[in-house]
Image (cartoon, rainbow, N blue to C red):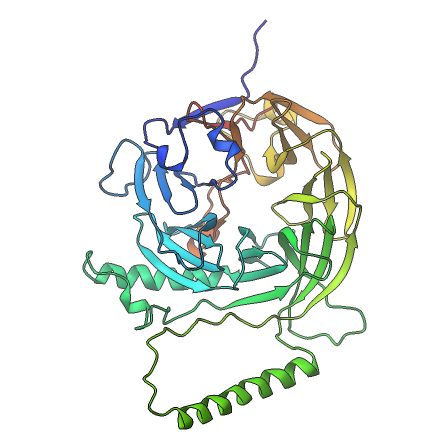
Length: 466
């Protein structure tokens, strides 16, 4: 009997030397907690605590001279040995106008941006804490969405930061324009002062979401209405969902304004003035003391207002991983008891529960699940967004399978065998541009990719079920 193959091989990274990131032993890709992987439609980035390797698994881009058949760049970021700083998160930032860079987060709270050739573009302190995750997402304006929003979310223990996508795009466009006008061997010193700090910092918002405990993961789900009985204004409010050890699920309303309490406002004015007076008196007393050559420490941004909405505490259950749907209306959360919770982020209600999935990981995917549509369409037909249905791919490594479930309450559509040592990945969100949004390009659905660490094979889940 003929058996349908639900995956398609796309490339292989076995030709590159990956021993620097731990390759060479069975299960190296999934067993190391310090190994980070980020996938793009053309490249893949692998990082350990101090090293980043960028590999090409598609020949559609040209990055100049390569060291072997796959390796495009080898990056060793400048990390602080005093603070024992290390790489804690990586993610691609991809724009429709061929701007592709790698965002790197460190254990000391620094956000760094590198080009695909390994050049440092930007380095900025977000908050003096470990960056757990860099989450890129966006909602494009269409018939179902009144507004568009594109952002980069920085997740830290008890802290959530947000960079607007338009600010990052304008900064990168300026950097690439000035970089092309300078010689190739010049460094990006024009964007740094004498102390090594960036001349231009990316604006961002920062919120403290540790009321219910330190979070292990978090996400900004989208724009939400203001609180009841509050005067309508032009200010925006965002909803953030966090998971952690103390509270499995927590939700907060994030205010864009930086208004703080009366005590905080007084302290923000009095404390700096007091320290300035003490510093002036100390200079008068110890006038003969030579100036210290120590660089001034960069300061992070003050916290904006975060109002708690709800939380779910169910000891000893602990939240582990969080995956957000493209629209932000659904979130899949895995916990320490082997359960997967499907959360409606608008109503803040758990609408579905799966049991028996320990060490699982989830990704949302769009599939052509209707057999009638797949058969009736001609071969040259380009599918639109309405042809696809939203599904959840659940990778159960202990079972050695990947299951695809239709959202929200649909049945299991597919079960795919998944070899041991495989990780499921998804390309990062692609920021839109004015030219791309106005063009009539075909819709690109969400896809799930498989990376087999032992063989180096990269494959994709077929979007056709029939």
